[in-house]
Image (cartoon, rainbow, N blue to C red; front, side):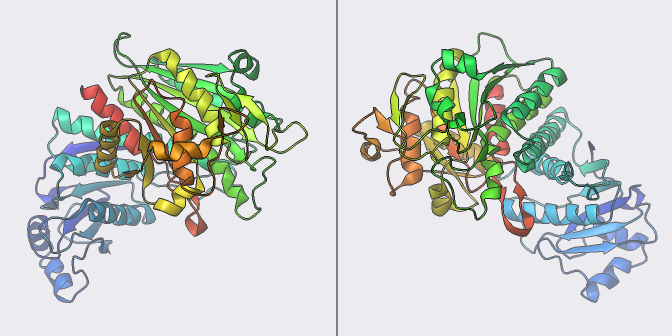
Length: 492
């Protein structure tokens, strides 16, 4: 979509398919001029109560005389002087939903006096660009008849056409591109989105962007490197595992990269510790951590951030067969630490631990792993907050702030040594589960044993990565949080 910036001019002279005016339901600003041009039509609508200006309320007017815009859309902002960032999202999304429903080809958004609590005016521009672009996503690849897509091709936002504003709009769009890449990969079924498919999609980034390089390790190479934990997950599958490294160089080679590590279990049956049948179809989403890594690298490369980033995707399929890893088996990780596998459904930490060890070759400035790791995190935080663990409190606080800024929120969880003994094993250096208590915490404690030399954080996105029910589908999280973090590093 082409998104541009223009200062507000006389609204009745704006030529557009649909003019969107954000209003509290009072005659002021742009509405005053539009009302005069239309011989009091707006005043009449307001007086008879057709539009009261409540937050996210909309009134679509397909024709209004006296203005050049073909259609007018009023979007309510409420009666307060400012709105929360949550309400800002609601009113933007409600307006965009009407634009898409009416198949508008272009639009102009007049924000008027709309102000968001604790946010600069430029935040609204970046957020609008992101939500406009995200709204264009439609899953269609396995449908015989594709759903109608968004007709929007151009949008004008009311704002100064400054270099800084244009850059923020670009960041908003590129974040959305990354989110939509992540959603598509998550929504694809497991018989299409295999480890090899993820490798193929990653290689597309290298062809698309000059600053991206992709390398893929096969199982033979992983065996040589001693990745016994990762390979134990794919042992029962006919689909071979892949370790994918996506390197983006946006800064000098001397600058240490920030490494993102994604869990890419393209389908998770639980292995020998077989999952219940109900909702097992949703285990195609067990690679959403990997998808978010690919999506974030797409956004970073598209925005040409001046930062070095490495995305590592640990891709495998967890299946039961005669070759599958069994409960009680002991494997040796790339780090040399041995692991007693008490439950083969706790496989995400097994693919991640070897990938986290592999990350050391890049001498990283920071390491963040992203994984749909535990149902316990869903119980603790639901679908709204991402579980955030880190071995450095200031790093956790930094990522939490980045999530708040991006409206992609995470909540810090404990990573205390008190929990570590739950992973004790009589037969190996550690077990891969810590019992029924604090399952998300002990999973993070397990990963922490492979990250002692890094500035490291773990994002458990099990509740946030996809929605169930009528709106079933991948959300694209936490691309917003990750992009905001990397954007802040580029500023440095």
